[in-house]
Amino acid sequence: MTASSTRRTTAHTRTAAVGAIAVAGALILTGCGDQTDKGSDGASESSTSAAPLAGKLPADIKKAGVIKVGSDIAYPPVEYMESGKAVGIDPDIAEALGKQLGVKFDFQNGKFAQLIVGLQSNRFNVIMSAMNDTKDRQTGIDDNGKKVGNGIDFVDYFTAGTSILVQKGNPKGIKSLDDLCGQVVALQQGTTSEGIAKKQSTKCKKDGKKAITLQTFDTDPEALLRLKQGASVADLNDFPVAAYNAKTAGGGNDFEVVGDQIEAGPYGVGVSKENTQLRDAIQAAMNAIIKNGEYTKIMEKWNVTDGAVTEAKINGG
Image 1: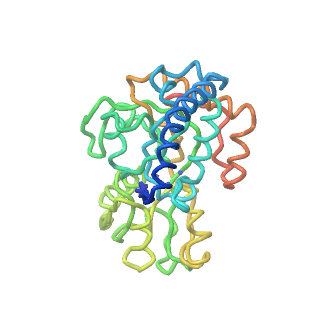
Image 2 (image 1 turned 45 degrees about the horizontal axis):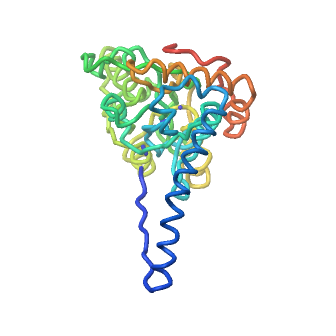
C-alpha cells in the first residue's frame, strides 16, 4: 500500500503555575520526579527484558526502549494522523511488534521521497511507510537509473499493487494505463506509482501516442485534490489506499477505482544495511505476530486481508 507513505510532528507547550503553593508543589514534584524517572527507566528495562524477543535487539535500541520510525503519515489507511496520533495499518503492526521486542515504535513524519536519506543519515532506525520492497531500493538506484547510495534492506510484511483512481463516474472513461496516454496524471513523488507512470509514458510514445503529463506532489492528498478538481484524469496509488479513498472521500462520492491491480509487490520495513541485527529482530517479531494471530486481526480490522503474507521475508521484492 500510497499508500505512505505523507506524514508529521506535533509541538507541545507547558504552562507554569505561579504562587507559593505551586512553587512548593513543584519542588516536591521535582524531587519525586528524579525518583520516578529512575523507576520509569527500571520499569522500561524490565518490560524490555520480559518481552519474548527483546534479546534479539541491538544493545543501544534495547537500552533506549524506542525504535524511531520514518514515515509519510498521510496515506490512509496505511498510516495517517488522527487526533494528533499516527494510526493505521503500519502503526498497528508496529505496536504488535513492540510487544514482542519490548520497545515503543515512535513514528516521525517526513516526506516520502526523503525517507531513505533520513534512514541512511540515522534520523530514523527504520522506515514504515507503505514502501515497496524493490531491487532498486535494495541496491540504491534512483528513478533515473543512477546509483545514489548503498541501498537498504527490507523485512516484507504485506503485498500490494498499484491502482488507478479516477473521479466518481469515470467521466474520462479511463479503464487501463493505456487510456492515460496524452492525459494529465497526478501522483506522489518518489513512489512506485511514479515509476509505473513514467514507464507507461514511454510506452505511449513508442505506440505513437502522446506522453503522459505527470504532476508530482510531496503527498498523496495533494494529488487527490488535483484529481477532485478535475485538473488531472487519474491518481495512481497503492490498492488499499485507492480503495480507502474511493470508499471515504466525500462520503464515497469523489472517486472510484478502475481496472486491475498493477505490478503487485511487497511492502517492507526499511532497515539500514549496516544494521542487520535490528533487521533480523524485526523479522523475528513479524513472524511471531503472524504465527500468534495478531497480524491477521490487524488485516481484518483494516479490511486488507487480500494483501496479507504468511511469512516475513527479507528483500523478497
